[in-house]
Image (cartoon, rainbow, N blue to C red; front, top):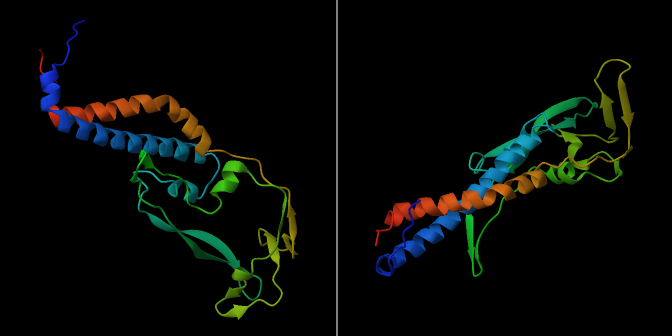
Amino acid sequence: MVASVVGERWVEDNRDKIIAALRKGIERGLLDIADRIAQVAIENADRFTKSGDLQRSIVSVMNQGNSFNVKVTRFDADGNEVEEEGLKVEVPSLDITRTERGFSVEFGCFVPYAAAVEFGTNPHIIVPDPQRTHIAGKPRTNPHLRFGKGGKGDETFTKRVMHPGTSPQPFMRPAIEQVKREAGGLMRRAIATELRRAVGPPEKP
């Protein structure tokens, strides 16, 4: 193994380039770490959801800037189910924030039920949503919840339901824990790449 010591003169001559490359490398490393967490979280979420909305709403390089509508089921004036394009979900960009203390990057999941999947829910009462009682200008004067496949004798109507709650199905926290073990390597590679681009390999003394 051959070891070499970088000359002080070379470091001084390239000081500004090195500092700029270190800063850029740290930023790139943070983005790489956040994107890696998002990738693992998307893989984890595949086990819990079928629609794909949860996965698409996780901020990553692939998903950033996307917008889509979460499908919701409403009821018409006769109590029939009507599937509509509902809540619009907008996925922000994966960006670096510069503060007095350094750099940070924010990421997360942007469908409204993400926390319920991640952390579970306590027992709670479900009642008809008043915002879902107007279809095509026809208000429902006696809204009910409807359950079943819609076949004869396979429907239940009620004004309230006591939901037993749901168990946590974490997808984000396990991703963070997994990537903690990879973060150092991701950061080192990003910094080394930016240093090579900025100043190339150091001169041998």
